[in-house]
Image 1 (tube, rainbow, N blue to C red):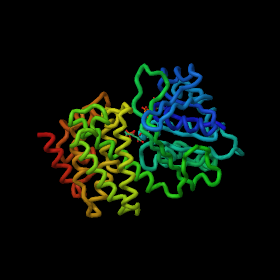
Image 2 (image 1 turned 45 degrees about the vertical axis):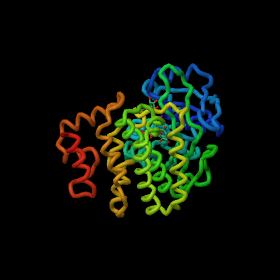
Image 3 (image 1 turned 120 degrees about the vertical axis):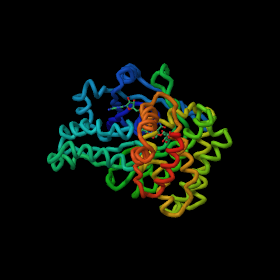
Image 4 (image 1 turned 30 degrees about the vertical axis):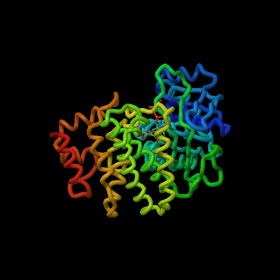
Length: 380
Ligand SMILES: NC(=O)c1ccc[n+]([C@@H]2O[C@H](COP(=O)([O-])OP(=O)(O)OC[C@H]3O[C@@H](n4cnc5c(N)ncnc54)[C@H](O)[C@@H]3O)[C@@H](O)[C@H]2O)c1
Ligand SMILES: O=P(O)(O)OC[C@@H](O)[C@@H](O)[C@H](O)[C@H](O)CO
């Protein structure tokens, strides 16, 4: 069995690749970062160091790496004969993966079992997005090719911090992980991924993950940066940051209970586990990494504005979430391009235009006025 994984970065090596290896797949990493591809090509194994309570070292072997910029033909060949394709490249990069998948499907033998494709990104319906890109590229040809692949949405959860530049290909991760996969598209031929669970309706799971783990994380990063902290664990140790994270998460939990029927006690336990994970003192995670790409994180259906609008529409509290949105406007940490772009937009656009450009809210929408007022205050 062979799996091709696009994106050999933090979560690619530290989670997706690890579980595919443990599930018995021969692993082919595909990435565009030449030094990373070279390092993986030279390594016979790498070690995933789980740090924190219950953590152990796991060794990954039986992999190779291909540079998809330099050798797209080799990538198409690998995809054509794989059983599984996964991605962890970032939601905005999926459009660049689509041509490789299409090229692989064109070469795939017609009688082969359908290729199982799963995008492991922090976004709602990421695999659907990838399928739409492939389908759009294929045009009319999709009628012949569509039976050669199945596309299943997934929700993946494991905190994998940025790794030291000179740290080689080993990865430091937290011990916790969760991987939920939409079962419908796969039928009975499920991929062999240890610990993954298959669910009929992924919607509630991905929303619970994004609107708790990722909303809470964003809160820790944006409130933590304003409080002068660099590490996520340090941010949580600051009482006012902790209170702000907790307030935002109580609001998203109330929404998830109301919308999906999760039990309030189950949500309270889920929240506490997550706060404990954020506080892991051995995990070297930073506000830079967790707050990266604030334009994506502030967009209409993402982890802050998304749940805030739905909560407002249901008459639920949104004060904690709006406090995080406000803090995000002050985020200037790290080398990230979108962080620079947000600060530039704050000087270039007026408050109404910026609110719509960044959050997707239109004048008259719930919360537009409140967000616009926060933007205007930031610009004064
Ligand atoms: N790190 C985490 O804790 C975590 C957890 C769950 C989900 N995720 C999600 O996984 C995705 C990746 O996150 P990450 O933290 O591993 O980021 P990362 O930057 O460490 O890894 C991304 C990798 O993708 C590669 N890449 C970029 N463009 C590419 C292309 N066109 N083709 C192939 N590879 C390409 C990069 O070179 C890099 O190695 C994101 O969607 C993120 O939200 C991350
Ligand atoms: O990857 P992003 O930028 O969407 O979000 C940053 C972190 O919140 C995220 O990577 C978490 O560590 C991860 O989602 C935990 O499962």
